[in-house]
Image (tube, rainbow, N blue to C red; front, side, top):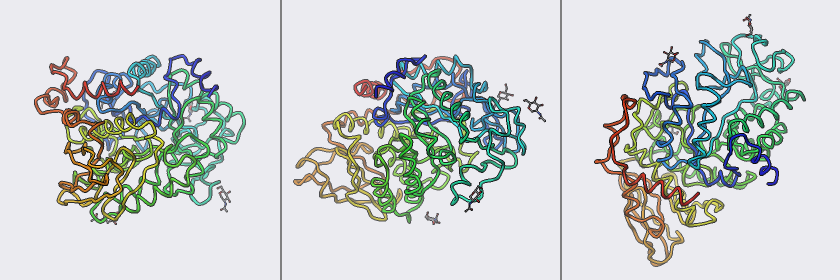
Length: 527
Ligand SMILES: *[C@@H]1O[C@H](CO)[C@@H](O)[C@H](O)[C@H]1NC(C)=O
Ligand SMILES: *[C@@H]1O[C@H](CO)[C@@H](O)[C@H](O)[C@H]1NC(C)=O
Ligand SMILES: *[C@@H]1O[C@H](CO)[C@@H](O)[C@H](O)[C@H]1NC(C)=O
Ligand SMILES: *[C@@H]1O[C@H](CO)[C@@H](O)[C@H](O)[C@H]1NC(C)=O
């Protein structure tokens, strides 16, 4: 604690001194800088299959922070920031940022040092956090052996593990010391056993976080570096760490909950996708996975990043476009024990499949704010914030599955009760949840539909869903019907006609919809 306060005090850019506990209350918007927003607000065409830079920038992000904040997000995870392999390769250009060649220079495609500092300052001025994405495991080359002299600051072959492809994921030495990538872009594996290299990275992460006022770090390819590298790395960063351990196995992933603050919840991601991809999915498998995680991880599921989509997996709507199934699946990350993460574009209904198709330019959506999925995200963030505000223990309250079948789940995390189903938009799910824990006859609201319902005499809930939609239930005392309907926005204030491809043309003439004021007010109350 003392250490983190000292580190905070030395930051070049004042941060919000974000603790892990503060991160737990947040919800994170993940974006690919190159694809989120351009500096001048223009909307160039962006063919994802070409895998070229589409010219999104840090300045572009600054100009679209209202869009992110109005959905209720209070943290932004941006793609990696350092200089990458230049020019075309057999795998396209390094627009995603994961192909480091120089740890000490920023990627000029995204802007200048000053731009990145301005982004950090702009986020902090709104009470929002900045999470930067870092890659330690490897550097990117365009040949085997790499042209080592092109790397900064490691320009010797001896700075890297000897070349071998990873071929055996059951052999952890193979996973840690052999190389990722392919013939086009081999990823030269850093010798993270070497003391000089270790010391470089510990000092590098501290400087990087300090220079740009980052409040958290997302760490790439964590399982490809020996575990005991990580605690001191996380400590050196001085901020919250979220690790990518790309594996669905709970026991395997649990080891990494001992060495970093948090990990991305891949073990729940796979059953989540399977549960809602079609009407034959099994929701009880999602429930049993989460229960197993609750006992296997150092902090239960609390210190996990919960997500439905990200830059490395096909978007949910590439599998299934039934909007009831989509909305059920989208609800999950916001109602569980983990920290919700939403990958940019999901709210706009993007459908891209495997990388590179899942890295669409967001400007092509016009950043419309009244689409049903944007409204859904705004509602889910508002519901979670209301629950956090009403129950000081909400973020430490372990969720309970009050019922779990193949086709439905009742999830309790007081004062929130979430009812999910996978029957799709032609189904009429019904729930009878006797032990929901509300007061007798308490007045409740489903924040998704804004329907008011009453608990029964025993505080239980019996409801029927409409068109397969999820229900997220809160007491009316903490989430009023008028707040709920205001959140949904109304057609007369639609931004869609004004924004879009020509949004650079000038200031928009529109009145601020009242939901924006309410969301801002609610956010302010919580800070
Ligand atoms: C991005 O900028 C480069 C350099 O100015 C330009 O050649 C390229 O066409 C731009 N890409 C798009 C999608 O506009
Ligand atoms: C290797 O990289 C250095 C530094 O970027 C460059 O000057 C040199 O031409 C490269 N050599 C080859 C064979 O590409
Ligand atoms: C595991 O992988 C390492 C590195 O590739 C290799 O040297 C070792 O022989 C492998 N061990 C087994 C049991 O296959
Ligand atoms: C439904 O999902 C299951 C489990 O993911 C899968 O095996 C099956 O192929 C899917 N069926 C259809 C029609 O998509």
